Image 1 (spheres, rainbow, N blue to C red):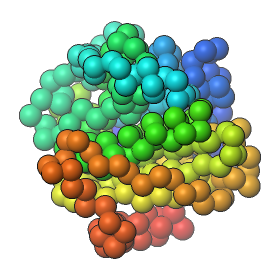
Image 2 (cartoon, rainbow, N blue to C red; image 1 turned 90 degrees about the vertical axis):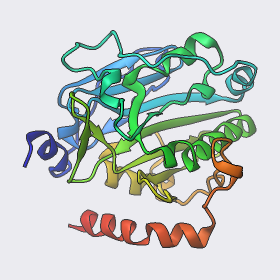
Image 3 (cartoon, helix red, strand yellow; image 1 turned 30 degrees about the vertical axis):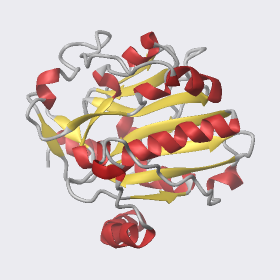
Length: 282
């Protein structure tokens, strides 16, 4: 088995990551509960979000933000702007480049979306490839966009929410480009609403046809990904089911039609979820 794949396939062990720098929007930082994920990582602080970047996967392991209704309102008046760039803070040997995604068959999918940011400068930071993973166009432009829209509306409704987004990998890993950027099996977005002391996570299959998502508890997400997004979240709340808002209709989906009816979602992900459950029980 490839060494990189082996590093992500080992059993989970507890490890505390380095604390976030002051003002880096992830205080406390998400905690890696899989020791192998911590190898060759770099903590990156941006104006409105932080990232734990992996030189093994050549992408973020998590991207954390404190999303406020005020920032969302400010961002609504800013036309999305930005140019995808290799992150200059990373060693060239560790960093993905635009050529890795060119003709790959995958979108450059934001973990922290540019529309979450309140101004042009902070929007441009989200286009750093350290905040990007390989997502299928069907997922990135469809239900994933709908989840991002619903998340922003939740921030406007509640005032402040904490959001951590990241990729998840299976034991068999596809790579793209000369740098062998890992392609996630799924992407996830965890949300905690401090005023309610409740939270949950969306998990979406990164597939080419009819991508679908489901929601799960934070405790289930931690077990599945090896990452605890909210270490300060009350323990009982991690096991509680929180009704996250339904994904909204993506403007990038033809006719605004998302195939996300409950019966369809269950049909599409039934086998996929069952497979993950079996792996987690081992």
